[in-house]
Picture: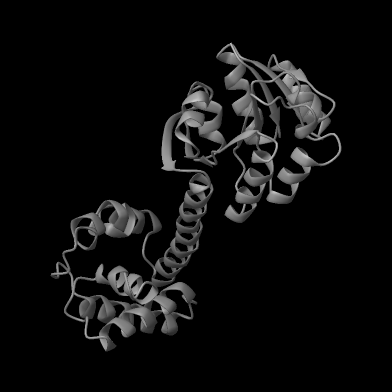
Length: 294
């Protein structure tokens, strides 16, 4: 089994370290919070006095930390991972940080002949505890294969996003969708409540349509992602329905900031002569606006 240094034993990190221990690996952990270290020891792990000590003798070092500044501090500052890690070890950063920070950390590790895998985590602490996390991995192929058994001990879905840095970028894209949809969902449910509808009924109805099932699994694969802009539901009709909803929201005194922004984009599509196209053609329009020569 593998000796692993684990830096960052928060809710996610502690659960993942526990699954590594269950899989038979030796896990030397470090976290500035004493209670986290105590819990790690109770789970069968060993505690270190610094990131450097956690990394000493480890074949794999994992960082799972709140932000890029802390990741860099844990790796490169006094007492950091870099003081203990060996040349043949691999560092896996599972933190969610800015992709440029990932690139800079990798560049600095490369200069010291240390391989890095960016593997931020999808799903929540619930799945982390169950060992069913999803990993979005950016790495050289041989580095990914070297750490695959480690990732498999913590999750059931490992997605090869491409070369170095792509895991970090995929995590930001994914989280932009989920965090934005969270606000949109809250606004729409508040609007529904204001109309007097039963909340459970509204949720049930929306879960039976693209509203709840999501465009990524319904309308987009069927239309715009395969290059088909013929209308299953026209932009003109979507804009009309959105206008009605926004008018009603004003009558009810409900603020719908995200739908208001969406209405402006539908209007832009109409002005561009796309009103008769499928509503998913919004993506085609925005993509071509962003990449006019593609």
